[in-house]
Length: 211
Image (cartoon, rainbow, N blue to C red):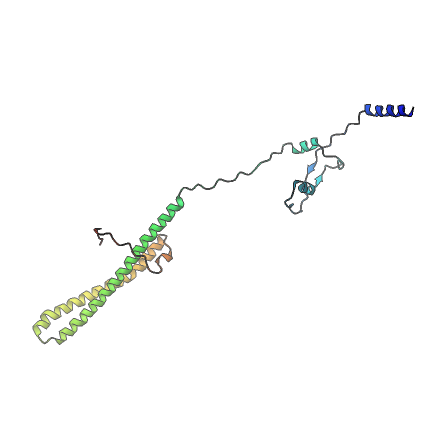
């Protein structure tokens, strides 16, 4: 009898369906404000650090697959697309080539101005020596015809040439600075004009000379 009663009770319990579990309202996953950003870790570590905040009056609800689907409704995952690298159109090389050309041009003009000033100074020194020589010859010549007919005219010409050469020297000495100022206004760098200026390559045999 006891065995039959036990079997009957077990069958009755199996036939009775369990009461339906009410579907909980969607929970809102909110990270507590003011907390530091979580460190990198496994997915389980991240899940343990996330705190759930349920709507008022629903503190003891269970998160189910249905509620997770409801939480995810309307959510769209996006990924940032990396910006394409800048196109290499050769503009940098063109700018470098243009700067190199400009540098060579202004350095050449500056070097020519320096050389012109050196030539002008040498010419002044030569004429000064010539004037001094003719002056000495004039006063040391006993022949009046030679002294007044040859030495004196040569001395006068040397004095005139010396005065003109000194004017050219004053102009030539200021030319390098004018070239430098003009170059700086054109975008040149001050360092281009420091130190020895590069010399141009030698001309090939048969190449037409300039100025």
